[in-house]
Length: 204
Image (cartoon, rainbow, N blue to C red):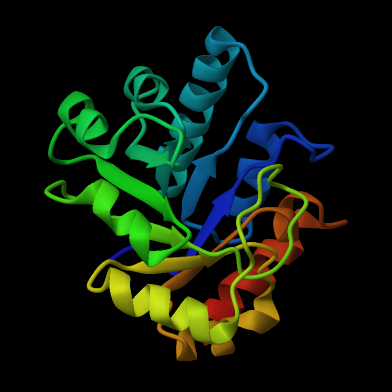
């Protein structure tokens, strides 16, 4: 089963994506997602390949947001796909049976997009407002988030959107397998300490 904490790198961080990943890894995070929206493809691939190597050094899982092609070329463990990205079926065909294919799930109706395709996990939310995403879907109530997680079962669901360490117990009670965070580490004054606090929270 996947770790309960996933860290997504952030364009708006004062740190490079690679430095963010390293700080998270040093803090104990063992699942990193490169979420780079503004890099040229060659730079994107190089950054992804460097982070993939870091993750191998730490025994961590590494996935790329948006692009199965970048994931393939960087030798990542898989890809995370939003509603406007490549289809999960195309990603599975390109990356193979052993790759991780995750999806963003904002409402139960979105499950129809994935019919007949093996999905490994879903990022569900948003849990609250976050500045790390420009096109933010409607923010969930606890009740609607719990209903979404139930509809997605048995997929492991990761709550996303402004999540902090103190949210974990409530989100777990709603049925979340884990949490996905970005700014909680990437914008922290001490990213390594922030990562440690999150790891401790989900391990409790």
